[in-house]
Image 1 (tube, helix red, strand yellow):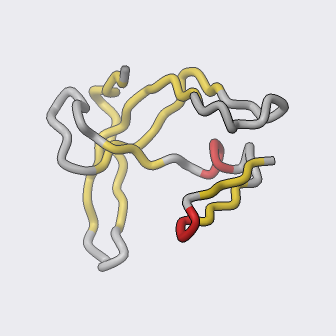
Image 2 (cartoon, rainbow, N blue to C red; image 1 turned 90 degrees about the vertical axis):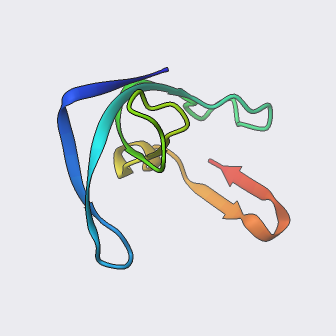
Length: 88
């Protein structure tokens, strides 16, 4: 469940240089994948994330951007061609 911070938004610039004002949501993020290593943190309560995409005003069907504060917790290797990932 995502809760929108009513008075908080952030400016972001896309790859094409277009600026957008995007909403901020508070979420509890957890990784639910049996392949996830047991010794790597997989739960982050109370994260502030940026909502992107075509979701409605309540965040339904909205995607999020994760910041470096979350991503830096892991060494993540994505191998999209082979549909594999490794986390340490």
